[in-house]
Length: 313
Image 1 (cartoon, rainbow, N blue to C red):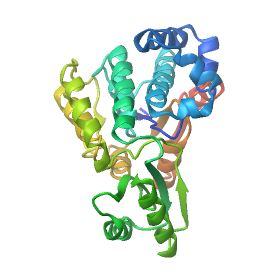
Image 2: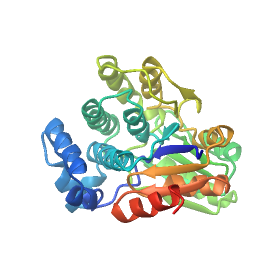
Image 3: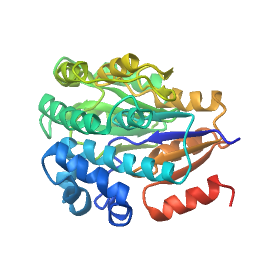
Image 4: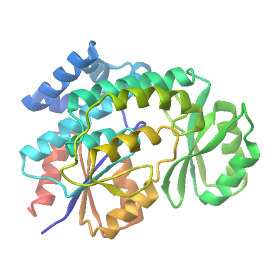
């Protein structure tokens, strides 16, 4: 029997038009978006479908948008008879993964990620912090470079350990730019600024972590129907209390995605399906281990293609 894992994208995967195909043609997807609009008290659908991009890119909008699109894809895939034995989400995607495993109710997740986005943006105003992907420089060399640059009010640090050859750095905008330049001089192949509005997974997010902790402690979490690999430890969890703790700690801690992909290999996963926007995670997994088949479901066409492959047609 084929062992399937679901993976859920984080920020940077959003795009104007996300989720519209499902919304227009699948009743259950429309219901999810309408439920999210009700929870949020504004028209998220309009922002997702029509933009403008600058509005969608604001993290308080991006986070619920990605969660809703991923959950649409999840629900539709399950309606077509495909489920997973394991899941993981990248940063924000961990909320989507926990919804998939029944640890969090959808409406609670929508409320929490909206607040998470607000808290993160309040922690560091737009334009003060940023992130960049450094490609082709080993993590130890990049860590040393960040340590050399960082001071109390000029911080840059590894934030997403995406693969052995790709690490995202985060911090003050000028510090990230300086680290990017130095990384290129040290042998990195590329340094790519990311379309995000805050320096996620850095110590600059501490005020956001403290505010989110209060909200998470007042939210009910349930034991998981299947294991989720957490960002904070890159290990599978099954308890609701573990899920809550992981979401608190991940705000300021690096996303250990490279190790997460190794867990998928160790668990002998045959196929991975990326649910929602973009193909970032499936692309990373393909490069990490070519024995895992990778699929993506974000609209009806990709759904059809993935179902055909997963069902062996």
